Image (cartoon, rainbow, N blue to C red; front, side, top):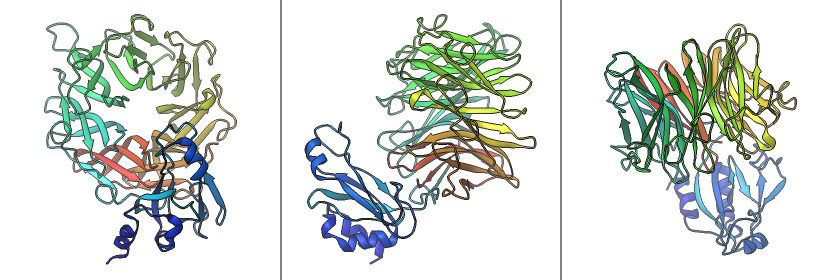
Length: 520
């Protein structure tokens, strides 16, 4: 019998860790990842009796608790755990073992093979990678989300021979197309136009799926010339258009008379939805923000009839990320074209007016080096601090860029170098496209060029913006996907800590969706 099978059999039923030294030795020697769950009927009972400890073996040097080899640490169940506790969970990867546990209290409930941080999780797809070419046409990913049950969603667009349609794909936890969603795991939505594009994805707490983007419409009735409007589409959890939203599940919004496109969506605690992107003023583009009620109607209490348009630079301004603070203020991150493209932040009051306590009249502009800077996403941190991910031109090519601002809009001097963490990854053309936060690290993912091939690049920083030298090679990691080009468009962290990355890969002139899953 293979050794791994024996370990599974030893730990298949709940076992008292204090009574299973052989199982613990196998865990330590083979380097498994294990999850522990406290068993109890009340939070007070768990707090009194089920604290547990981790002891690291001599190699590697750190546990997931940040303990040096041989030290011990303890984690208690949260005090707001509620009456039926199943929350005492931790992930300990790569040759970790338990030193002790009170008899009758803690039991193992799942064991699976783990791996070093940043390595592909070979239990997912084919060697940690899922490639999905679709027979309907070229497919392009734009966003990713993970459901509470671990299933993964990708949104984007797919060619239809005359343009494109909105695309949503759902995968099982093993990386297979989910037959319970749409048709064989795939939902294609034609908004009765020549070109529809899903550019951003959000999963509501009720399981409904929201996709934002753009849709083509005639400039005027009967015209063959088209322009684009904001598009917002909501689906039920099984992939059907939600009839309670907009007109048959979809909403189209024109901010001006020219081309409009949305690139980021956010959900407020009251169920209202925010879209940001760009809108044409006839000469160049401005940042556009629209707020919708939960049923898809424009929220007339926001801006002018639900719409806000902000002009910053002398040329094109575009919003690429949006987030809602705890106090209801809205932060939009994007680029503003001055002499070159600069990073820009705009903060609005809950009513859609510029927040004059932020930057200069609600606007902060940052030139990272005189060249073209790019922004892909924005995230909030405690204390009102704002993280912005993207890229910067170093004079020869692009590098990953991660910035942190204070609540007032100043670059945070305690982060990176003067609020900036600028990192080359490959030989050239490094573009950061998504960031993932955890309690002790920030991971920026994107695209990097190695030779003639674009691969997936990852950079891990500490919470202070300094590279984590224990991750990959000096804090940097490159992952080939296959084909000549790979572009990551979204990343997130599963409940067990594993990283899921989604994007588009190209090979032999065909564009396909891909997913990667990496060990934390």
